[in-house]
Image: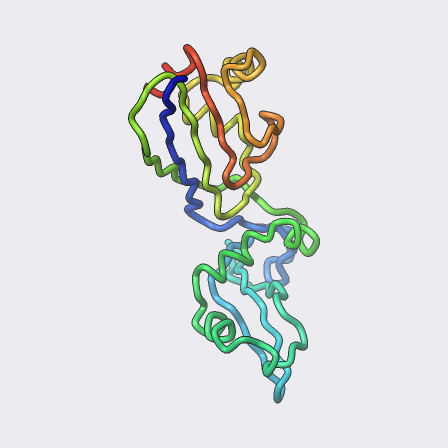
Length: 195
């Protein structure tokens, strides 16, 4: 039985997705960026919370509803503080709720900049496994990412996948979106891709 080289690739988004909607100031369908700020409105014990987006042209705003008519006494005080302090992790959690955003906008641009952080966990021999860590889902396709990691074309990657040199766990289609904790095993001569 051969030993396995294990690599972890963390996919780190460098920005939040832009959205497309009508701007009330520009009077046109345009892109908005996430301001990374929440707006809170409290009426006695009832609170509404929005995530603020700004037009890329005129800085006009659009408020993406997060919570509506919630009794503040039923909320965890730590969560309230995160909204009040514009906690970045909380902002990004909501900014990456792409399916919910699509229902309220004319479109969501998921073609965003990202960084790959690689960590090699073992130095052994003839089989390589890559584990992908993907905190914020922005629709990145598995074949596109693997072609970038291996430095090969998508057509060559497809051939390696079809002939069993590249295996995916769970067994999803190579053109599917990347999922968190996806494992890619490269066997035989395919291991040269990683060297």
